[in-house]
Image 1 (cartoon, rainbow, N blue to C red):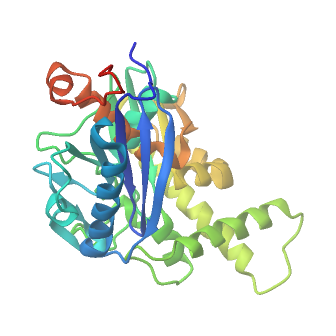
Image 2 (cartoon, rainbow, N blue to C red; image 1 turned 180 degrees about the horizontal axis):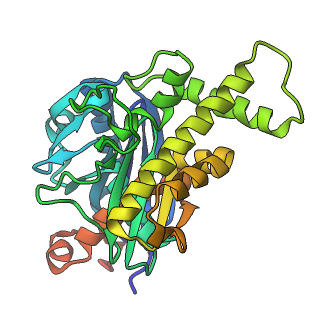
Length: 338
């Protein structure tokens, strides 16, 4: 099996979120070293142009060791370059054009949920699992069916959009254009909306984290905490999000019959803070033939790191092929030794 080497190939992996991005250098074997983390304003130019500058800086530093760049984004990708992120208002954004020149290094763009599922299949709970579901929750949520370790991309490569299915009974209009999307009821935006706070546009991560913290504080207390009732409201919001997540997963399990369902991102927090509510809603939504032996609902082994690790895996998948190896220009040491 190939492994890391001091002069060996590097994958530059990026997790682009709605409000920030994280850039890491990754070695064969999975070691990840975070190089940069940068907030952005939610616009295509505000997110991608600084990222392009950072990538060029590290391309110069690592030189010919870089085998490729993997970029995980929170939305569908069309034609390997055009990205749509509905709740940021991104429509057919040409990612390579905004990143700028990258020294002809291969750029692989993937949906963040699909990347998280790929990572979980290689380095987490889905290793060796024949059929599974992976759900990634952040401001919104995505989900994907994983078969024999491969997230199914769909006929046009724009799968992993379970969050835009009407799975929780809602009737609100989503910014994607559909009505009743599951993602309207699950995620950071849903927590904010539940408490009447502004949601959308990639803003509110701190407020969503505060809601989770208040809910945890109330859950650990033996009686209602003194104050203005925000802790009780936070508990209600978190339980509602967890129940909506459980109901939607039940519908997917009825359809796909997976062995296990893994949750990453905010899904881990919802599982931790309101696992009972999630489980009840999940079991209530199952067909009788599945309720006797339901698949496990499990927090990801990789947590929030899944999209970044999956972006890395996509680079090395492309690199460890005859074509990828032929195209790579390995670094040399004094004396010409590779």
